[in-house]
Image 1 (cartoon, rainbow, N blue to C red):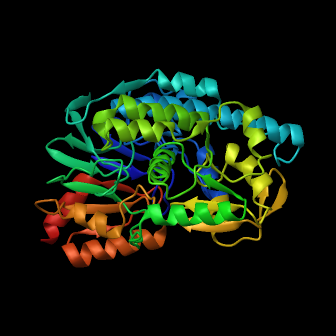
Image 2 (cartoon, one colour; image 1 turned 90 degrees about the vertical axis):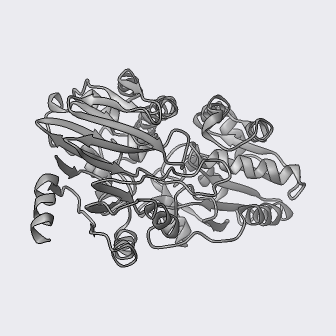
Length: 462
C-alpha cells in the first residue's frame, strides 16, 4: 500500500490522501484548498492520476476542505462511489450545491463589476457539477465494515466535530491505516466525544490546534459580554460562521443565554439558507448529538431564518441591536461579505470572529488587526470592534488530541501528522515523539510513501 499526501500537508486545507493498493486507487477526503492564493491555485492543478483509474472516494466529513473538490473530479470524469456516513451524505448535498451556486454568483458578480483579473471570471465548478457529484454518494453506517474495492475494507467510527464526522480505518492485506479526519472535543456541548481507536499499523492524525490549548473560560460568559456591550451602544453583533456545526453551536448558546435572561431578547438572524437546512438535520439525526428534544427544538427556533437576497440586504439597514450569524466562517465568501461591507466601518458594531481563521482569509486579516480588508475590488475600513473567540472550536486542542492518542493500546508503526499549519504540526509531532515515544513525522505536500517498504525499513532498523 502506498499513500500520497495531496493536501492538508503543511496546511489545514485541501484534505486529500491517495491510497494505492494492487493497482487500485482510493482517495480519502476530497477537499478544497482555501485561504492563501498560492494554496487556492492548487484547486486548478491536474489530478495526478487519470480519473478512470480512481476506484473509490471516502469522506471523513462534509466540510468543504474535506469534500468540496468532489464536483471538480466528477466534472473531469470520475464515476466511482463516494462513501460517507448517512449524515455526512445529507450535509454534502447541502454544502456542495451551495458551494457551486455561490461560485457561479461570485463569478457573475465579478464579471458584472469588472474587478476580476480574469476575463471572464469562471467558477471552479457550477451547481450542476455539484448535482452530478451527489449521485455518487454511497452511505455507510458507523461501525459497519464495508468492502470498497477488492481486498480493501473501511470502518467508520464517530469523530465528534460535526454531524456525521468519522474516523476511517482502512484494512488491506492485514495492514490497518487510520485517518483521524477532524477530531471533535470530548466535552463539546452538542457533539459526542470522538470514539477511541485501540490499534492501527499506520495513523494520520490532524493537528489544527496541535500547538495550543483552548481557553478555559465559558463561551456563555464571553458571548453574553460581547452581545450586551454591543447592545448598550446600540450596535449590531455580526458573526461570520460556518454553516455546519459552528452556526448550530452559536444558536444553542444564544438559546441558553436568552432562556436564562443573560442577554436581552434582541432579534437573532441566521442569514444562511444552507445553515437553515443544516439545522433541520439536527432534529433528524438525534442519535448523533447530545441535545435533548427540548434543547434541540430551542436551538432550532432561537433565530429568524433569512432566506431571500432581498431580506439579507434589509439586515444591513438595521438601526437597533441585533445578532446576525452569516456564512462563511472565515469571511471568504457568501452573505457575510456583504454584511461586512455595510457593518464593519461603523464603530458601534462588533465583529465576533469565532474559531480558527486560516492564513490568507479575510477572517485572519480582521483578527490580526488589519485596518481594512479588500471586498469586491475596494478596501473596506474595519472600524467595528473585533473580538476573536476561541471557546467555540469544534476541533480537539493539543491536549485533547494527545488524550485521544493515548487510547491506542499499542503504538502505530508510524504516525503522520497532517492538517495543520507548520508550527502546529511540528509541535504536535514533538509531543507525540517525546510524551508517547512513537515513531512520527510531518509529511510535505505531494510526498508519497510506500507503507510496505516503510514497514520493512523499520523492521530492518530494529
